[in-house]
Length: 108
Image (tube, rainbow, N blue to C red; front, side, top):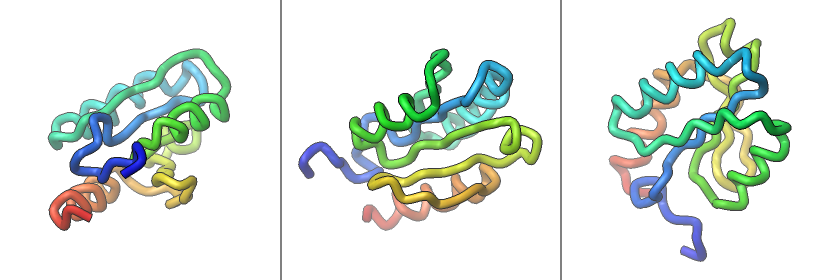
């Protein structure tokens, strides 16, 4: 797999990133929802530039990177990026869970 493990096999399946400290509580809430669904999640709450955090997690070849800013927090959604820098846009957490669970079920 050259480090790009399939979603169902990856040690960390989703990284949840915040843009600033203002979204920290919502990041923890999203992390808890994903973890409750049985996913292996990492919340990155470090005070770094968002481009740096996205790049760092992309290099680790994580299947999904979730970015949360003020707009996403206020709308109760998440901005999702799939491996390979594929922008899936913003979606509710339930839609993300549905997509991930389907992908795990199909073992794609």
